[in-house]
Each structure stands twice: as structure tokens, then as C-alpha cells.
Figure (cartoon, rainbow, N blue to C red):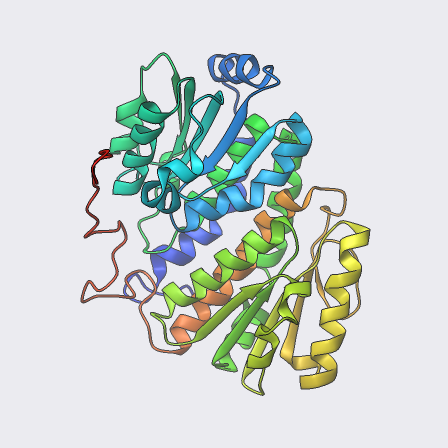
Length: 372
């Protein structure tokens, strides 16, 4: 069965940008830049180094997905802190005497908080270095750091600078690049992830059938790195449907502590299953619990290992959950796109009146002053 591609008016740019991700991953996983690698090798060789992964919105969730994998791989302190948190409370998050590598993610690099965060780090941290991962070579963040001795800028392929409203290929290309530069990802992993995403693309009719049920509540559940994925999935659904549906995110264990009270017959729960055999027990427990309460059709399970009644993606069973999140994200993006279309929205521009913008507007950045 061939699924018709939506027009540019109703989401054509978004679906093309979702669909290009396997090829993008192959490209970015195969890239090497000796100058960047040498810069990072020298920094990560320092036992006292702290790494901050930062961005706003979806770009912040890249850090939440990647942090634990980098921490294990490097044996260094790695913190995922959004630019919005740093700008609002810089002294809570920046440590003057701790040598720090700040890794900044930004599709355009034009968000005011992104620029303010690196400026605050320069002002407040004595020994600061920057790695900027961005999709727009004309963006302010990339231009501000290009050529600086303590900074390196890595630009994603031009096509990842998504023209659709929501971050899709921009997000996953920056995530994979981070895991390739500082984490456990290899070029071979890029191929495995691409094949898994291509399998998901072939399931578009099945994903659209989930959207056609027109559920009003979507729960996204995942553990560890997949909790960041769940958060991004909930945001993608909220953005593309222009708030038409209610979305929640949590971990399977955290879900029972209050949020589970919002379950009803108009709910679809998406559970992202961990590749870690210990963690997976908790994921499957919540699957069984929700199915017992609402029925099998109320839960969709995405897994990289064989589990009952799940969408099982091939070839990724041995990968870290931070990497598994990449094809899982493709599922979330397709589900959000098709749900938006079912609700009569225009995913390429869900807010034609400008209530929410592709690049955030209306933010005033205040200077750090002792009398403030």
C-alpha cells in the first residue's frame, strides 16, 4: 500500500524532512573532522572536565537523551541543562572554577537564549570551551563561535535545516553527531539506525491508522534516555496539532505516581522499550498494566528487541538507548504529523496567526548585574 504524500499546504515539507532522516544519518555518521576530534580529545582527556549539553525546546531534549551515554563513554561529568534554565538562573548552573565544555544545539542558532547562554558561560566560567552543533551556517550562534580559539562549530548537512515548523531531521542529525563525536556511536551504527528508520517508514499506513482513531490524550513513556525521547514526542504531538490534543510524558515507574490518573478510554499510550534487559522489565510491566485497564488497543509498544504485540525494529537490539531513540523518534514524528492532519491542522505551519513561532520571539535578555 502506498501512502499519499501530503501537499506543501498540509505538511509536505514536514513529511519529506521526516523521510530524509535515514540518508542524513548515513551521511553524518560517516563524517570525520580531525580538527574537531583533536580539540575534543584534548578536552575530554582532562579528568576534571564538566560537559554541559544545552539547547532550548527540542534542542534541550537532545541533551537529555545523550547525557547518560556520554557519561558512561567518557567517564566524565555530563549534565543536560536547557538554555532557558541557564539564562533564568545562571549561577545555579554555571561553576566558575570547574573547567567546562559547553555543547550547544540549535537548528538555526538564532534563539535568544542560545546566544545568551554561551555569553553567560564566557562571563561566569573561568575555563570555558564551546562545541556548537547547528544546522544553519548563517545562524548567529555558529557565526559567533566560528574561528574562536576556544570554540569549534559543526554544521549539519544543509537539508537538515528544516523548513517545517517542528524540528525533525535537524534534531536527529544533531543528536547522532553528538553521540558520534563524544559518545559510543560508530559509522556502522548509523547504517543500522537508518535501516530501522526505513522499516518504520514502510509502516506509515499503520501509524496513520493509529492517528485515525483521533484519540484526545497521548501518553509517551520511556526510561533513562528514553524519558527525554518521551518528552520530545509529547512536544512534537502538541506542536503539530497546535494544542488540539492533550499530551503527557513520564517514565514507566514515575507514571504510577499521579499521572496515571489521567488515563481514560480516549487515551493512546506509547511505550518505548529499553534495550537494557533490567530496565525493560519495568517498561513491560506498565504495558501490561495499561492493557489490563484499557485494553490492548490503548497501548502501542516500540521496541528494538522481540517483545509481544510490539512494533519491533530490526538490527538495533545491541545499541545504547540513546541511539535507539533515533528511529523511535521517527515513529513519534509520523504519529504527530498524521494526527495533526486528522485534526485538520497544517503541520508545516500549525500557528498561521503567529501565536507560536518557529524561532522563539518576545524574549528579553537581561544583563547580569550585582544590583539586579
